[in-house]
Length: 140
View (cartoon, rainbow, N blue to C red):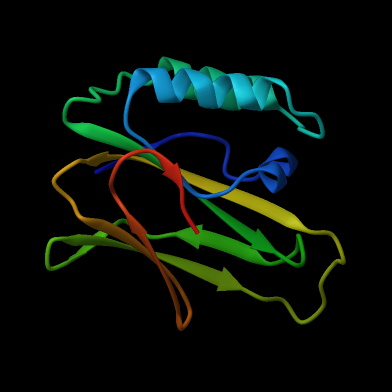
């Protein structure tokens, strides 16, 4: 499992949901969907990064996980994946200041994930979001 260096924060992520992409065809369809959307700060950079990744879809999937914060002043950081049995666990840490802003903040994290890994689990405090690493589909 390795991280794909998409922009961490982007207003356009508000349009998207967690997804696992398992083929070049699915990636191209996903990019076409994004190209049609508005309300992005830098859609071009996101698309360029996805297109420039050399993903061997015979052995890897592309997983994109989205996270929303109710304030742009909340700091968010991503830890390196750790293993829980056969599954990968990624911890997201939030730093909440005493005073915040009222703007929403939209984050995304992308990973190339070996197809042999059954699940990728994202933890935020006590919340766990488990994503099945299977055929392409939008996942909750």
